[in-house]
Picture (spheres, rainbow, N blue to C red):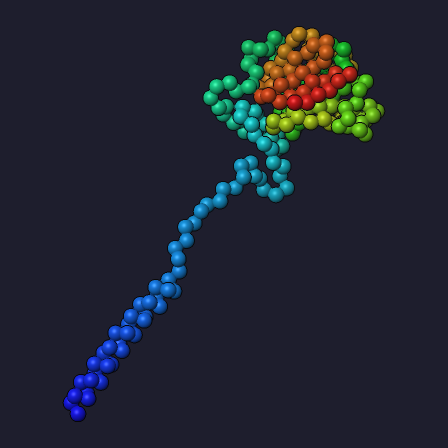
Length: 221
């Protein structure tokens, strides 16, 4: 009788050990694997929905849509691609009207502005276009359909405008708008933008982007 009790006790003890081993194995199997969290970076320049995204290039000052000064991105090492004030041959203050700068070609056919309070950057428009760029098929040089070009935020594009976006107030006692004359061979430098007047038209550069414009030809780069 005593032997039977001892055997039963040994069997129960062995079963208990087996049960503990089974519990440990179950716990190991149900422990979730460790997950390494990886942060996903958002694309640079992303803005809230409904707000235009403007690509910022090194060294470009972009006018704010609200009229406040835009952000300045520090240039990288080496050449910034921006024109130097030493390139200017005229005093920018002679072309300033409030916070913007306006000028026109000697013929008065090209009127330009370097704007501070609108999302147009630097641009020019024609009073009379002999050639319409193919990018503006519906711009027929009517009084309310004038050929224009502009550069802002590292992007240049053609415009067909019904308003004098780049036309300054009259100066020198005349009634014709457009601002002071930028004579052939002269260069105006303002806010990292350089515009040069020649008999071939007006050329404006802003950190490697810009345009040329005349009655007979308009290009962007």
